[in-house]
Length: 585
Image 1: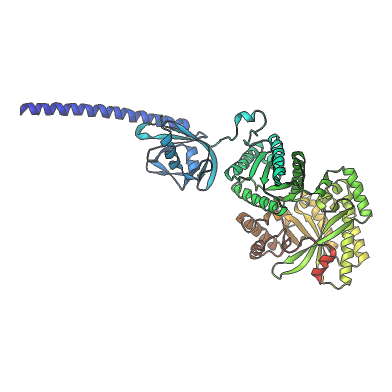
Image 2: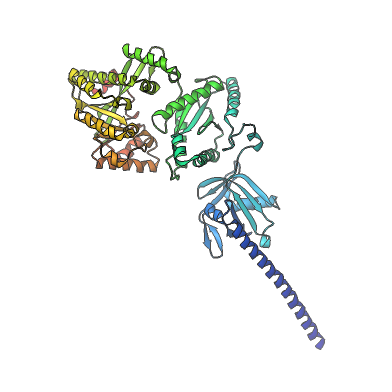
């Protein structure tokens, strides 16, 4: 009995010693881990890379500042949890839960591993990342360290050194595009297929760079690349060209209407992608050239798509221009074009088309905008964006302006004699015309010659031109008003006006820029902006015209926002005189 007691005591002493030894080892390890964690926090809290320590049950034990922001983490007792949903998209697979992705990878990788160029989706927001999983640093209870690098680069680093890949975005460069297009031309010839080039340009990019700096615009370009990576299309390949431009090669685009539809969707989607940028309202435009219609080799196609983009960005933003033969006129020698304009005026090659303006509530035509066209003897009918720039540079814009006024008054006189209902004709006024001191006198002479009412004419000037010299604009507008003319501010909403200047001008109407209209039915930000413009205009006593209306959904939204008038292809394209007269009967 005594012997058993002694043995029991010895056993208890040994057990206590073992437990004490284990406890000391455990405490030492805990202290070590705590010290390491403190060091981890001190060294990594403000690192640009997101870092987390996670348990085998996916409990987040530690997260630095970058990880808290990236994953929208919130504190829960002694750990963190994701406020929402975090997923990983790998290659072409569907997104799966972030921790499930790590768990699956762990089954085939017992040591450290990484995810390269994965798409991290946190509450719907996507970001390209490289993720490094380290299982050695924190090995108590199978904890792991996740390091998320949000500055992931795409592309082959070796290829970048020889210019085949753009260093900033990781996309194939413009040098690669030439070879790829010529290869695709050969393939398309064999299969009798077509394709299209879409050249994306960021509107007002140089102004943005001047205002916000190169670092900001570099981020804009990287984000643009991210958009295309995060929204892949098997029929599309993207290249980084010069400056702000991206070239898209799209297969199976064989009609102009389909090309416009594709470009329109991209403009809307990219606008939504940048919607959270508080620094600027980023918009893009597209130039389009189709094979084989617009060129039969890479050099011609690229030249033509650049010409198309140049035209698209001249007048407004969020524009789409498809190359056609008449576009090449802008690249002729300016002196020769100047001579052709002089000859055109002498030979009466210029004519006016009229686009109706409709009242949305009464559903009737209340006016029309007179738009000049050039019936060129070799190139056929040419729109004004192809020749007015040269006319402005050489001063011939004054002669063209006088022709437009004379022709519109002659036509007004004829319609009055035929007994057609009265409506106001809107005439576009260029900045160069406004700087001609004798313009008012010439207009008054024309009114006297044709015996027409000045009130039947409205002068249309762009918001940008009006704000270029606001003091002179106010004086000139007052002179026009004294002459009996009304005035509208065109392309309003591009961001140039201030309220102080706006309310000082004697305006009849504000014409909302089409860049705010084309996606109005789906873009809530544009609806808010348009509503604000309409309310402001009505407060100041101005009427409002929405330009570029193309769908019945846009009309529904504009009507609900109390917009007064609208014009666009939904109602009518610009019509020659005899076709337009059918609307007046």
